[in-house]
Length: 539
Figure (cartoon, one colour):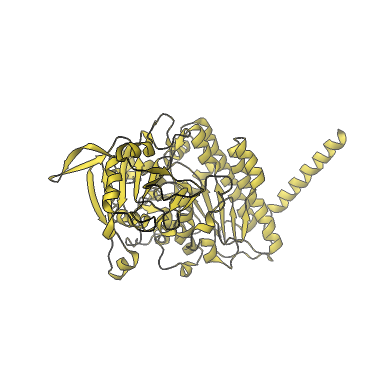
């Protein structure tokens, strides 16, 4: 027993010695670029809950490094559907989900009849093979990069996963331990840098535990607050370790999430598959990994708060469906009664559905929500640039989503009191402001401390911004959807042709600026504020 105690003390001593060595500054032989970037990607970090935790002084490091030490984009939005895999790939490629092809956590490709679900144990790390757009890691290459735990990391130099240990923690419900392990990886990055004699120019630390805690316990739970506080501790530890190794004046830090959260434990279930079978009398199947049969008329992929529906043509899955067949599905999801809109009678979604988007022939996109129905013309990126057109951000995002054969012909989003899959206490995937709004902070050399910007921005702007900050803007592809926010960060007038805005979004889908939130209850229904200029103000 005493021998075991001595061995334990020796192990602890060696560990402390290793940590002490890891925290010392790099010698001159380690190549450190003049500008580097670190991305903290916290899955499911709800902005509204984060603000409350900050008021309660439970996130001191986020306050120190980002709220007081950096710039806060108060009106940042994820792409819809607001799910992890589509937004994670958008984060790493600067493209809308429809343009990179990962349209949800699970999708069906009508052109290949392939069904993929990344939420399974055997597939959660396979997303990199399902899109062609270049990632930030591939654009930085041959520069050294590092990614901890993030599934979307194609082209990264150093990849850290800890599949066995994290898998055991996940299986036993210890999700916070996974986040703690993610933060501790900074020591491994530092040690490897000493051996390889080069420091990564870009690093990602992905924290998945917060989102899982929200699903299992709810975003309003004490456990969720503790999980966020734990990530805050890890962020502080990572920043301290990096500053000890490379100094405090070479690194930009970005904090972002992929979507917001809603408490869904008491919500009503809406079985879209059963509803369509009853109302249309069509052969409606749910997508399955083993493939799709031609012996059906439509394929349903229900998410927690969104559902994608693929409609088969008369011939096969490769040809586009007829408009009448698409409208049969849309009408089945709509109420029988109509409402008057500008002199005409429009049908609106049934109770439980917030809005319905659908793809029609001739490049038309239909929108049906509580205000009625209307058409949006498809926005082609190349034609838009050639003609110097600037359609609304809503038109661009909706057009981009329907660019992909994996998006479905009909997409419906749940209202605030319903879900399409009843699984757990918290959820996301819908198009409500709370689900779309995400935290976005930047800290680093030249970034004014304690400032915030109310200009609406998007998750697709993060990748080009990071490349710009580290001096690699020239490597950006010309056809990406996102734009660099560096001009706003450093106080220059914004180029509003390249910055997202609320223009075109229905009022109940608009995110809220800090000014709006101070005067309007955050329900999303009264959201206003089409920003005309970037506004950076002292907090």
